Image (cartoon, rainbow, N blue to C red; front, side, top):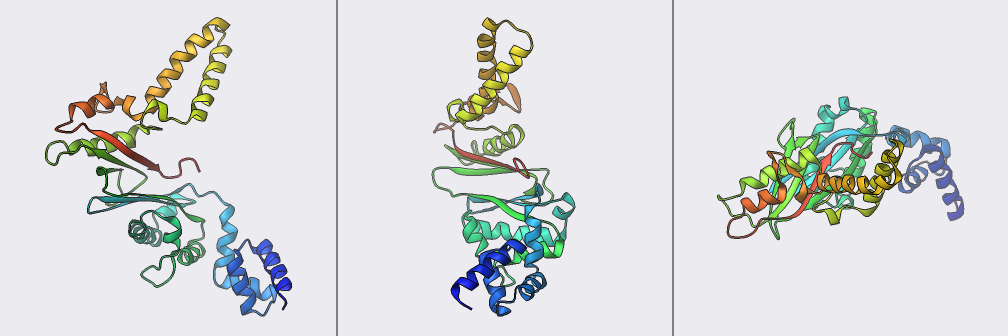
Length: 288
């Protein structure tokens, strides 16, 4: 078979099955270019069956966190239904993936190309798991916080097991003094999980989000029948409130709403000023 014929057949097979280039080429090599036998080959290996499911929406699943020696990794693996998220095979896959994620420092490409304990690459085991369970499963996102520039803390909301849940937050704080104020790190992580800040401070919130919110606010005020001259005045107050409610340092502290998070950080500072260096929050399926 010429290179052109091979490429044409790969293209045709991809269109028929939705399978990737590499797997299509392997199937055609195995079947000496026979399209029908190639489809059968892919189906027998669970690849075509898995790929057909990949246009579905996977918004359930699990978030997992793994900590070792002050470093923390977080990952989200999605399934289509919560029923599968409770499946033993899925949970075991997620647990091993959480450790791999830590060792790969949150690099998704490295994760997919890492061998699991069964000797199979993550990306290949994933295809087999999809075929076995019968649902779309995706490794959606991952992150890694090293221990430079601060101390890491995390919180798992309603954990089903240690380090496994639906909402996980991770925060890095500078200025922690062991045995003096390290408890505040866990509390800040809990606050982030509960109130979902968009950014650290007002100026860090994506301008496109602010513009869209302002547009909605102005339309709402106008549609309520308020005079035109009042729209700008009222909208300024509302957008200011929006910025406060969605920036971590300006949010009302969840454990004492009379204080802001910035106030609590100052109160709990010791020799060094407590500062939030970075944070992240995963809620399973959010934004899918």
